Image (cartoon, rainbow, N blue to C red; front, side):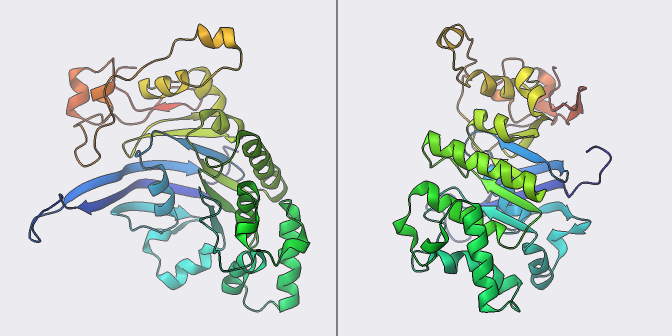
Length: 328
């Protein structure tokens, strides 16, 4: 994989939002909420990049910025050599069919007034308008059958399906245009544990069949470990660690990653009882007023004076592991 060119290259991506204090006058200057603050990463063909971090760390905003669903302050998003952030809406539409998204809430992401046949076929009307109605219907039946939805349910509405089935329909909608990349924004967090496993296994099977690349966002580090090739850890919109999945779980480098990994449950009750869990003392700082230098320093047990003065760069530590820390 290392001798291939990246499918997606993100460099210094920043997504800032203007936020005015509650009750502020119209002329009051807005504060800058730095949801994503200079993220760099590459995604290789056929790879799954897991993205983890606490709520509010910028995971979903990063995904939406890549898809141009939210505007970016700065940076580049190179997709097959094209900078998506500089394209016109018309040119961007050409690449929409190559990059699809699966959302967190399976039912809320489906139009309740449309049948699942209409929902799944909608991308074809946008990106393949020359297909005949019979061709569209055949493609819809094929993709629904692949995700485990019986074709005879094509005229039913989303409320007639369970959460797991709705997420399968969402996957079918993403697959119908045969994309090269699917961004999964916490696609199993709203599902029961047993259904989570089924959906994850389905995604992995489809990825192998179609040669897809995946960006998989989740809170559950056990799920991320199972599906990911590499894992990127975000904290307050900054990348603090990128590593091969096995290496990250075996020997996490950044103190924040160490705390996240220590909180992952172990199936063996005795081993879990004896496991040391690293508790972070303070709350997550506000992205409206992040700490200077290293954004993690206010919660880090190893912080030194240098941490307050400058932002640590991602540094190679061997075995493909990059860590943003002055101390380690």
